[in-house]
Length: 153
Image 1: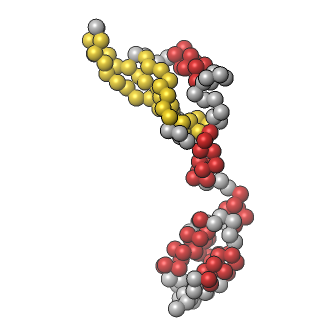
Image 2: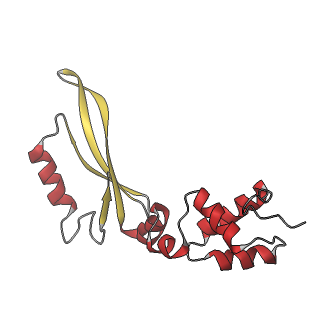
Image 3: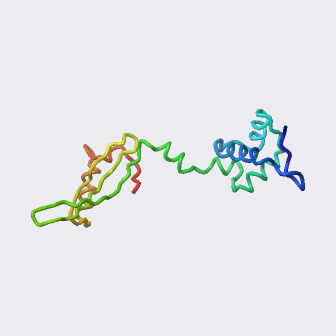
């Protein structure tokens, strides 16, 4: 049975059909109202173009031209996966001759290969230490950042 429209006092479109419209718009960002309307008709749902427009507007989804101009975070990651390095710190406590000491470890992960590189370890991180780490990682010949474009921290 076809879902009814929600234009001007008509019955509200079924929740399942509304969810399908939203899913189609989110998964196919270049599809306009008419393309979604055709895809819905292919699976047995008859909806007016304005009903589709109202559903998308009500759920904060822009029309196709605006949707296709913007890049989502997921799309950005998929396009640039092999160019992204992630960075973070962790601490470790080590017994030394002078007793228990805490060290800071800076590490990097190449997201495409999952290769981990320890950038450095220090008892107190400062600007000079970070500058040397940056020089080591960005070395043209054998730096971990060679061929990478984005650093996510």
